[in-house]
Image 1 (cartoon, rainbow, N blue to C red):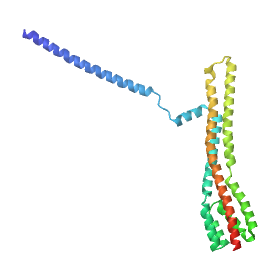
Image 2 (image 1 turned 90 degrees about the vertical axis):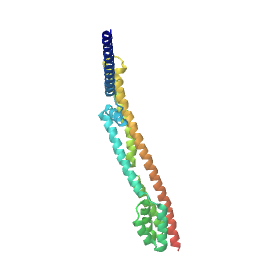
Image 3 (image 1 turned 180 degrees about the vertical axis):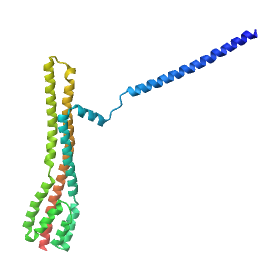
Image 4 (image 1 turned 45 degrees about the horizontal axis):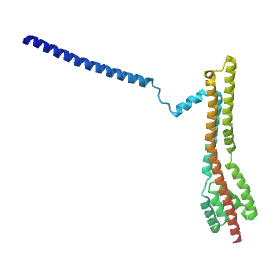
Length: 258
């Protein structure tokens, strides 16, 4: 009786151990399968594209002919804008302090001391002061004419190349519209050649045509921001020049009376 019972116990232990091993094996296989599936899905899932990558792809789709011209307009416009911004920042001076220094120099050392001060100071206001002081010996009217004349010269230097920037602002969207019109013409030519109206047939051509307009408008917006900043900077410097010119004539008149 004990022998059959022992045999049944051994058989039960064997079946139990086999079931446990099989369960562990199945669990391991399921875990490996899930890991493999996750890796495959991760590899097949498209990576998130950055703004620069999307912009580059859209630019390439727009075509090299018109998109290249629009890009050239953007590069040239930015070059002009950066050059003007650097020049205007270098031309900006503390006019209030300059007026005080010139007035003190006139009171202590006369016109020659004031001229030396203006000669060693950068900026259009100092240059105008120097021209007015240089003509001061000929009279107040002569100094005033010199200030007005040289003020016009300085204004021309401040506004130099700004017209080119406005040209690039105007031409960039025009080029974009031209590319769009040409793309639409090509799309309609394809419709006429095939003979039926299919959205999938012309969707690609229309998309490419509209991209030129988008990039033309983006170029114009970027350059317009720089243009407005430059114009505001020029207006500020010109206002300082006018106020300082009036102050110089008043100082010369007061010094002459003494």
